[in-house]
Length: 126
Image (cartoon, rainbow, N blue to C red; front, side):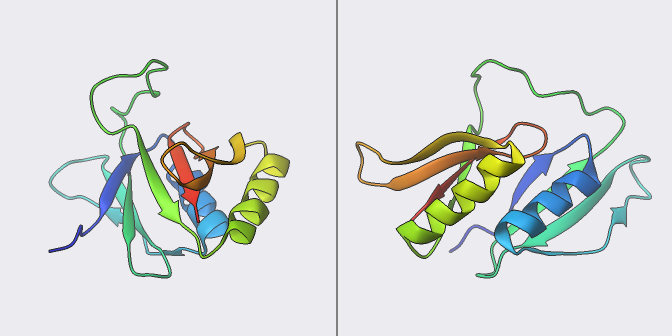
């Protein structure tokens, strides 16, 4: 058994696709527009290891709530090394989307935390 994909609502489908392409070398698929749910559009961002993130939007999507709440909190993407985490964190700092710089966590991960265009947190780990 394996996780097929995770899905992420976004206000700006193109910005989200560009973020996943730029930060994670994702291959981003064409836009899908639903005939059954007018206004629903999505694209799959497939990471080099085959994992996928479905980016979804629609006119009913609202900005993310600022407080912690029940539900998924973040996604973690494992990079090949500490140097890769440092390099991506530096690029994200320059882009203004680094939330927390690289560090060793209490549970043994070397990680940094970045934000996707709509604020979704992504841990990048080695």
